[in-house]
Image 1 (cartoon, rainbow, N blue to C red):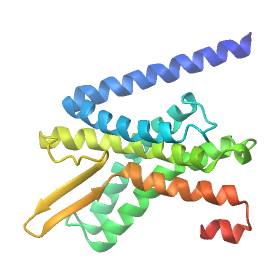
Image 2 (tube, helix red, strand yellow):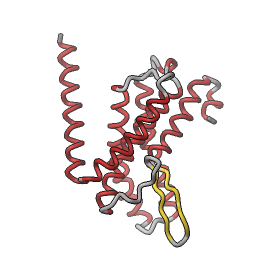
Image 3 (tube, rainbow, N blue to C red):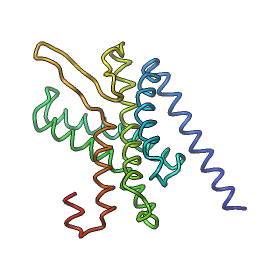
Length: 207
């Protein structure tokens, strides 16, 4: 009975915190909240549908990496301030590459943590399970960032037709921007394939 009460309290705190996060983001980003959430939902929904035959994770288990990925953007902002202090705000090559490495590491960190927690059943997880874990972490990060970008720019017309991507055009031509969710999904798929093959550590690290 005591264990059940603790689980109930944890669920109340979790969903209460989730609701507070959503409301806070909505208040601060307005329409950007819905536009970014819609594009993220379309991307995730498509992957969930195509992975139905091989997925072993429940939809409830995918909420956690989404929340953790969203929380990581706060750490990324702090890291960005640090890079600006050290390298300036003009975007040096070292600063840009370093910040990219930090962001990708932060987005994949929740996936590694969830896999560690599921280590007793990880060999029953398919590559598509890890793909979805990574996608949800990347989507959480993408959604928060994109909501603020849309709000600050006052427009969402720049959004590409493919979810979580953007097509920018200037005098130098067009440029396709692939969103955080897609990059993290690719990283997750690589980790999933490495775990699936169960080869030597060198082979798994190479993958």
